[in-house]
Length: 92
Length: 229
Image (cartoon, rainbow over all chains, first blue to last red):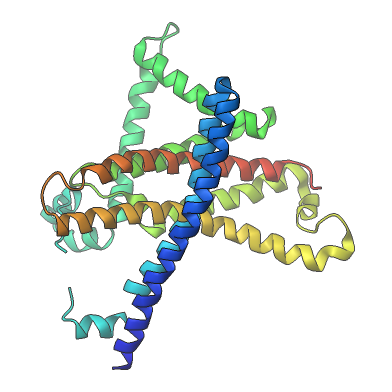
């Protein structure tokens, strides 16, 4: 039953981890988007360049959330007692 | 969650190599990406004319747009890096987009493919640094003054290793997340139309992630070429 307790803790941590990461990512991307829209409002001619830069910046910020997602996936699917848990739950 | 239906492993099963195919999906589909790119290259290269037709015009616009974007970042002396950078871009783009075709699996959704692309960029960066600066390349890693070496050297080494991690995990995470969401939506909702919005997002993600990988690679190449501060 040690394995099951560890699994419960790991899954809880995975849920909270990705939620907090998404929260931070939302704020970060919102601030980037805000500056991009202000820039376009001041200077509509530069809207092409600003949009490209904004998309690149959003992809970079999103990648931080994706690192947290990968850690959460590791916690759910690839933690050390994965074989024991799969046996307990009947495998899939 | 059911097993997805994949075309190419089925072909391999027909010739008796099914076990290899199902264990190494990313290898099989990497071969498919290579075949697509090589065949497209042959067809396009043979049909090049001095006065371009419509398709050639579109391809020239696309390729020269990429090249000008690259030269903006690396400077004129970095133009010889365009073949490897564009190859990385096309490989990642075609690999990502293959996930949207039913019966195909994107090779970039496996960590091995993305780590291999990131390692190529990492070694190319150091090759460029040594080629441009010779033995003085070590000055990139030691910071502005020699008393600060114990501070700068570990930071620089960790930052270089983190480049490999970040490049590979960004691409892998995006594609694996996309595949997982699709699998879960099929399992939960089951009909044809439920995963469609996710696949529309997948087209955007495929293009953006390929472009971000390309842009970060050329920024690392440019950083290796410039003078150390």
